Image (cartoon, rainbow, N blue to C red; front, side):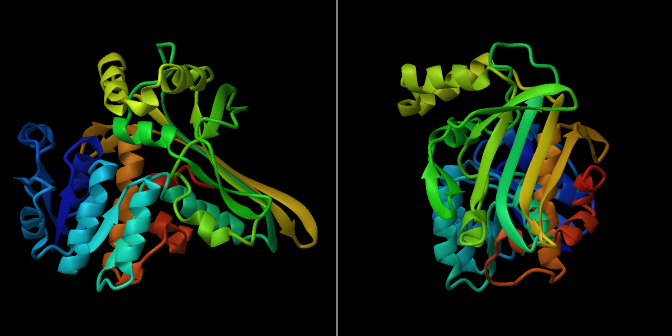
Length: 361
């Protein structure tokens, strides 16, 4: 039984711990500095809890002592500290971060690491890159790759048409930081919240706009091979306009703590959500310009007999699948591992990845 440390006992971290624990193959230590958060987490005989201040390097190293891997479900600004401790202790490291700067630091650490450092193992970044890489591999040459992902309430009931479904810090970071894209064959940065578009799926109208981090390392991987590559977050129409008022007109992009407080005290969370994955690839196949599209929805469900939201399930299943593949020797055991190096068929065949398989085409 492999010992796993999961850092962050919020909605995603506790779901990861529960998914791993119920297999019987992993013993989990769920760590968080907030004792009340640990108390709220679902209980399981294979899950131990520990109060740990990530800022305390000694306590962090002690947490990793003897662990096969550490999985970070902590806020993005804490990921580099966890990665640095993992590199020093030779512990395999996996995270969910969408933060571009954090991933660059993980990549630097991986150059001399004797363990595997695998960032961005969730939904987007994460599964979306695995799926995009598989779609792209079916073409002789590529022209355009467009990726759209959203975690939305099934029943929106406010002007933002939104409920909090995961990390508020993460959402704000996505809405503010520059976004990587490939435009006219060149890797560049485009502004967040811009290039808004509308589309419909199953008769429902959506909007999508640039957000940061969703592509992971895919731009680096496909640079020179594709004319256009972009990622946009899906929301219901009207969301972007109100958020731009808050961020730009009221200047809350410079007061993230105030914006976080407003959102968390004004928008309720909801377990009744839906995750939408929509990807389109265009290119040459057999001498003809061809397009392939992958679109599906994932809804809330049960984990260990307990109800969990769609974003909890998809995000936790992503990182748990990568851990399983790493433990089985199907991934490199040292250095930096990109999501697009993971074969889609291996991902979907995995016991955790099957959470996606029923709806993936």
